[in-house]
Length: 320
Figure 1 (cartoon, rainbow, N blue to C red):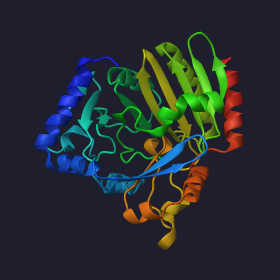
Figure 2 (cartoon, rainbow, N blue to C red):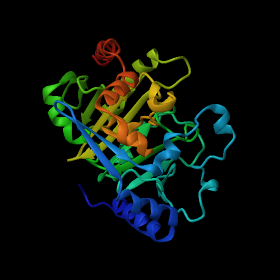
Figure 3 (tube, helix red, strand yellow):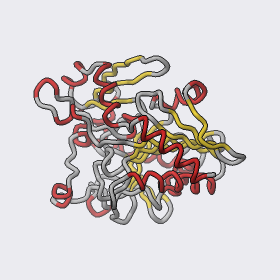
Figure 4 (cartoon, rainbow, N blue to C red):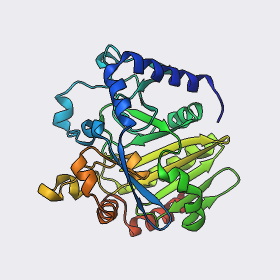
C-alpha cells in the first residue's frame, strides 16, 4: 500500500466529520459495539453483523414511485450542510457515509444526477480503487442493494474487511477454474462458495476494461431488455495489481425479506453481503438467523449452476 495524497485526505476528512457531524459521530461510536456472529463452512466463513444504523438502507424503497417522491440524497444541493466533501477528478465526490459498516466507509457519487449503471463507468472504478488503495471500492447494481438507484455512485471501505478478500487465494487454488489466462490478465470462476463469482486480475488497465466489457456484454444478453444485469462488484488494488470480483445475481431480495411473522428476516443483500458479511439491522433477525437460512438466501440470489456454466462458455468464446 502506498502512502498517497488522496488516501491521507480521506482519512483527514473522516476525522474532521467525526468532530463536526453528530449523526456520523454517534453511528461510528455505535459501530464499535456492533454484535457479530460467525458461521463456519468448509473452507470459508460468513459473518453476521447486527447494525441497526443500516436499517434505512436495508429497507429502502427503490420502486420508481418512491424514488420520484423523495429528493435525491446524493445530489450536491441536497447534502446536509454539515457534510463535507472531496473532489475526485471532475466527475466524482468523496463523502463520509454517516451509516457505516466499515471503520472507514465512504460514498463516491457522480456530480451529475444519472442512473446507477456500471456500463461506461467501470474505468472510474479502477481509477478510484488505485488511488484509495487502503480501501476496497464496491458497486451495487440498481436492483442489487443500491439504495439510490437513481444517482450513480460507488462505495468504499477498509480492505480485507470482507471474508472473500481473505479467502480469495485459497478459494482460487481449491475451487477456482481458470476461464482465461494470458500475459496481461487472469480470469477465474469460483462456484463452490454458496454464491458464484468471476474474478479478474491484472496490472494492465486496458486489458481489464476490454475483458470486463466482454463479460458485461454477455451478461446483458441474459438480462431483460433495457435493464442492467443483476450484479455486485468489488475492486481493489494491491502490489501494483487490480483484483476485481464480480458477483452475477439472479434476484434482488430473498423470500425472507417479504415473509411475514417469524419467517421474516430483513436482509437486502448487496456487495458486502456477497463478500461474506451479512448486514442485519434488526436484533431479532440477528439472533435467529441460521446456517440453513444463509444457504437458502444465497441459493435464491446467486445464479444457477447452468447459468454460470453457460456464462463461462460464452465468455471464453468472446475473449478468445
